[in-house]
Image (cartoon, rainbow, N blue to C red; front, side, top):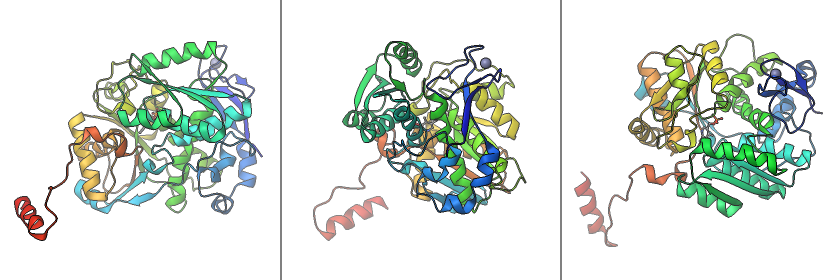
Length: 407
Ligand SMILES: *Cc1c(COP(=O)(O)O)cnc(C)c1O
Ligand SMILES: [Zn+2]
């Protein structure tokens, strides 16, 4: 049973039949999937979800997908880890890490992509594509291969080598001379020429819905309770916008009590911080920037959902932090040292933003806080200088000597 009813313009509220479309023909506003929430409330219970598959597909009734067509590599249901050692360093008492780097292609992008490519299959596309800062390319190429689709993924020529290798072994990578915003413009043009399913263009309303599942899982893993405050990295702003929608929907369909609004805070790199700057200025206007940061997976200078992310942050009483590349690398090390999790710069930006917001008292010690760590450190080994402690001859004395040198 599919409860998604239509696509609705976020601005003028005109509705459209479900299909591969993404903007309103009347006012050019973005389209959003709507649901029959009464129908969901009647059928879906905590028990029915818990009896579902050990992946994000346990929330299929809250997603715009039919049950027959699925591009499924098992995305979702990633660990939610209690982070007491990190909490202690930050003066917090109830901190959790949602480790979304443990998805099939090691980033949270597997959530939106598994939904988008399921729709691509349903709509009859034979080829899929995307404009990507790296992780989306990996994910689209992998899910396409699994679903028997051809794929072309377009990336800026200067993304991290490991991300290109991972995408290239899975599908066709096209390196574009320009930054993400140029890649995205190119893909919008290509989508007029080729009848392909572009994950984040004509499939974008469906793509973005997949991100809600990180909020669903967080509440389920906390024993069907909402956290007080979440820290979410912001690139296009889709993830943050959908995290808010996800928590709101759980209340709407009665899966969690209606006792609080989760505060949603954003995390950006200073070198690409259009949403943080607008937040700081009290403005509604997102001014595009030219990205310059090691956090390449967040380097979108003109974020499609920036305005909506900003609105979600303000409505929920959150904030948006911006951190330097140096703070990002320090935070990668801090998370590794305290919690045993190795993340890429996007995760570093999130943890550094948490550090900043905690030190400013915006994240409060009385709150239950969840930070979303969205990508794996092995994709970007070049950002941290880390080497073996020593190279030694294969004898005990050799090791003792190395140990003494260390101390
Ligand atoms: C894409 C991405 C994000 C944020 O995505 P948006 O939905 O575009 O804001 C966060 N973290 C990682 C690792 C990503 O690849
Ligand atoms: Zn409209």
